[in-house]
Length: 382
Figure 1: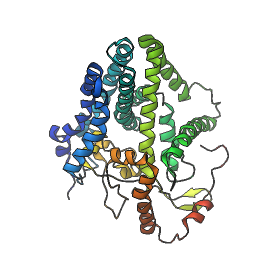
Figure 2: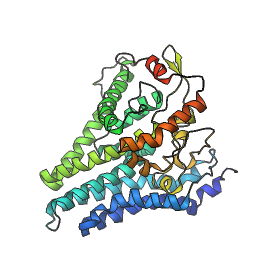
Figure 3: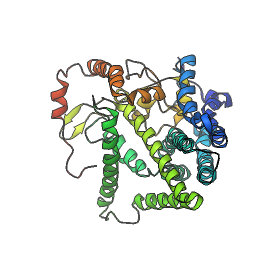
């Protein structure tokens, strides 16, 4: 199939489906106003609706011309830039109104907090991921603000300075190991990524003969922004507002790490010796070409190409055939639900990992011995 032209990419009709993510805003407001079963509207919107649309619409296998200029991507860039003000408005309204709402029971409040976290994790962190990879300062600032709003600012350092360098190796905490269930992966990653991100920034400063506490360490910015959001939560909702803020941040983080778990489960890069690994290729990430969930997640599921070409904006990310990259059977929402049930996850995915090993690394017969022999992470390395 011929690549989509820049004119086709720039078409509002082509860009419009990606704007469906903004539907979470009126759904969030409806949930807050109505209570009752409506408090589950956001998870249903993000997980169920788009999975049903996937089943109805199938795969999107057309690829955009990767050489398309930025002028063809204005509508896509605008979408990611306007999200933070919208999320901030919804967050502020929840922090203000939930503690003052007499019509909401305890379980309804819990449902609202869960739904808010789903929105901030599914859309907010995902958009932050796109923005942090871009060069314009405005986009990087937006990424920092979105991550601070869920107390996960270190994700920027971890993702850019650790994950993209060491994906598919023992040095990357985010690469889920074969047969590792999500409930073991999650606490390991919560601790490991914080350590590796801080070490990576400290190592960067050390190469410039600067101490970790130097003013250019982005952690000062991370801490300041996160502290600002905590104070905002207290100012708007008091102690209950702070609890709401912490609850939605945890849910958003859980959403992010569920996706991280799915994206690289069981995949490894070949070890070349002397601390070196083969270059990252499309085969080192799970690919999913499901149309509707890629609209919702701005092509995050074309993850094979994202790691192959990290600076590519989301409308230009390519999808791959089974001969080039391993394929997920469903979009991220359904795969994330499966990941919460380890026996089901392993039944779905372990045979696919084994098939991937046979396809791309047929010379490795004993994977258990091979993984044990991989170069261990040097002491103090990120």
